[in-house]
Image 1 (spheres, rainbow, N blue to C red):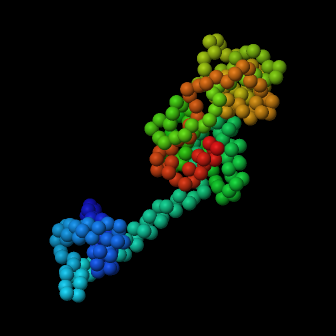
Image 2 (cartoon, helix red, strand yellow):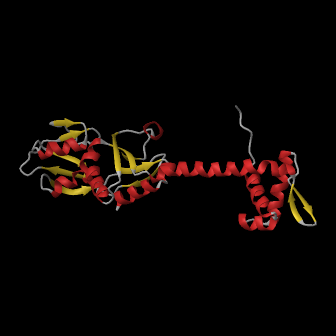
Image 3 (cartoon, helix red, strand yellow):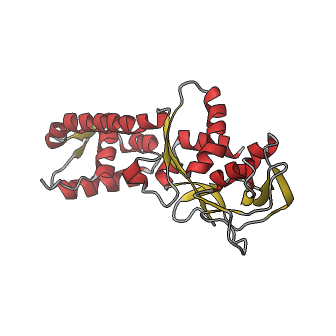
Length: 262
């Protein structure tokens, strides 16, 4: 069924003017001028084809037509308020669904989510493995982390990193370990793996050396499982926290982004 177009601004002004029986006091409540209230009422009367107010010696009075609709109008505004509260209730949810590459989740994200959760026992996380572009609507996502040159079509913030590092295990060999998306080494890799996280594990096992994102290798470097050869190399690519604007504005997403970029 086709819905009738509702002049919501005019109806809101009618409600205020009817409660105060004064355009001046209604204007004060709505933070507009009395003239603007009068214009809205006249426009509403034109739209509805009825007279809503009459001026008498006693002041402003409602017509019978206006009186007949006020109860339903005010009930409708209450339902609007309930609808808004229901929609906002999702913002108070402590559950976040996050899509991220598998290796980033294992090597970097999970330890940080554990720190975040330690500060708020009500938080719940749903983690989805996603290496490519994700459909936020289909997956019901709150936030995604992806590798690229920027946030693309979404809102986003970069995760700080020193770029790419070449790593080797203590006593490890010189063979190259390749991974999907790795910088070209100019030769054939001894071992080829699916992602940078598996490349780090292969290096740790002594299979050779690999060039990987510094932030993924940071825990293995700190633990002494691998060491860095040379200086980090800047990269135009990096990891980005991204989400469409409605999700990006959610309080729970803002708080998580702030924690992950602190």
